[in-house]
Amino acid sequence: MEMKKLIILLMAGLLVVTFAAQAQAETYTVSMKSTAFQPKELTISAGDTVTWINNDPMLHNVDLGSLGKSPDMRKGETYSMTFDKPGTYDYECNIHPGMTGKIIVK
Image 1 (cartoon, rainbow, N blue to C red):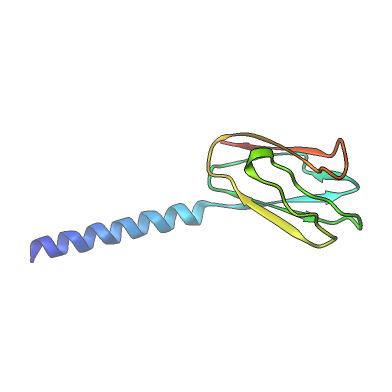
Image 2 (cartoon, rainbow, N blue to C red):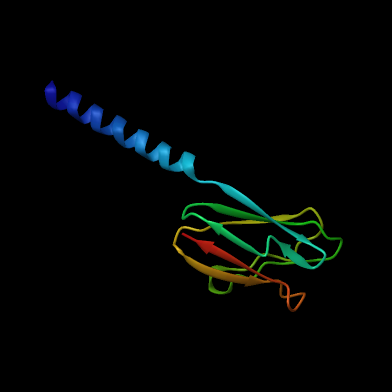
């Protein structure tokens, strides 16, 4: 009986830790407006998500190199990515040379 209680307590503790970690993850928004990413540079924590939204009437995309590339997005469309590993991630819009941004994951 004692072993059963111990197992239940351990499982409950694991659930609490899992939900606490998930609750701390945040979502940030980067706007594509006037052929620029706003903000151009964003610092986040590992596990956070970045959502890019096209607020321009023209097409844009987000190319993160080896991490992936969004489809071309029309006004109002979004693309999201969760960053799990610390590092610096440069990205660009392939449609508009010079439209670049950076995600810094701590």
